[in-house]
Length: 463
Ligand SMILES: Cc1ncc(COP(=O)(O)O)c(C=O)c1O
Image 1 (cartoon, helix red, strand yellow):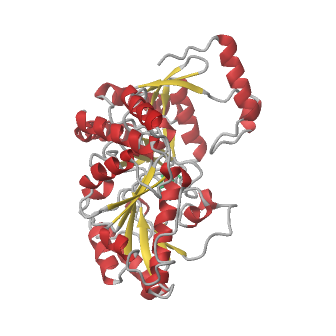
Image 2 (tube, helix red, strand yellow; image 1 turned 135 degrees about the vertical axis):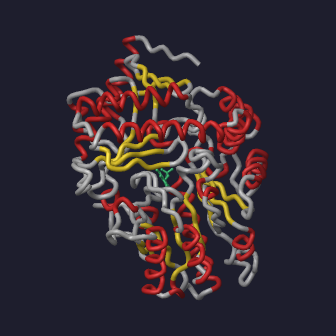
Image 3 (tube, helix red, strand yellow; image 1 turned 120 degrees about the horizontal axis):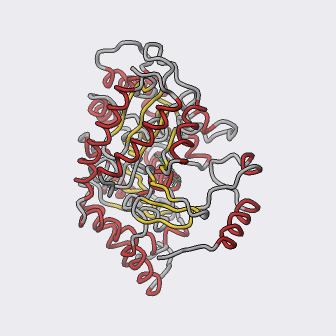
């Protein structure tokens, strides 16, 4: 692939973008003064903008998506071959790529057996919520329909996915929300809500039980959690959390829905984040890394037990899953996903994530030794973040303008990093990193060096 825009074309593209395109998650006021960034090409971990600037992308397409890196001709070829043979038929019928991908995916997910295709993480989660509600309707007279979600987690952009989102700033101004979604406390030990606690994981999980008892166990159908909270600040639940969560779900007959939209497909060094913790989920949703952004695809994966409920045939006219996603029938998604999975396997990327993830965490802890503005370093595999604080004693978060300035500094030096972005109130103070799973030690060093340089200039108070 070669895209070399000449100066005229580049100017034209930027002008058209500036005039007509509404960028996601972006304030457009600054574009009255400066040009928006237009990305024209990618290869490996690198991207180029329309002005010819080269960047090392430390966040896989800005939102932890391009797991296998840019410019993968084998995925493009697989998609092309599939499209010229059969591009689309509604998933009311099967297709070759969807069947083959489901088979491969389920091999990686013992205990689960059914794959429902759609297009985005939000949509995959909506399907899960509909499954929970319909089970409540069919089996419990509609009663066990509530879904619990966790403070600081994110599950998507649609109104109902936002209703299940524990990020105040992400939700603000978009209500009223869908009823039946109830928040449980976050599990970020660094921001303990209960002071010094010996067994924080257990304590945070027990709070879920309290919410179930308060709401009435007969009203609660599911608990929806990210295995490691992503946009809410890269939060790995502390030891003891998951065992207790599973016990609680079992005790109160609550389905466990794990949102793997970010962690899925190798990001943390296992195929799925939940696989680090011995979790046996009832429903798993995934999107982003499934096809690394080469095609739009998401999956809602369930156990056979859940699937069977929709065959019990109480009322054959109504009691099947009466849901469709038009573009869930696009074959490009599973064709790209098959090629994406093959790359992860052939190139042993799970091992690379473990090795380079260790290196990344080591280097970030090195930064923490150097700059007392870093209060906490968190993450797993090639999925990391650090929280910046005014001082380590009070843990007062720095103003988000500092995180923005650090991002801009890195960008000027050719490295794209991420940050929590108007998500959880007050904690827009976390720098996030999620380079492609193919990252080398040299890539990691360049990324951390860029942050080091930014901190040296913008937050130079040494430990
Ligand atoms: C954990 C999680 N779930 C769901 C979503 C929503 O995915 P999408 O933007 O594809 O709808 C996201 C998006 O960032 C996410 O981080």
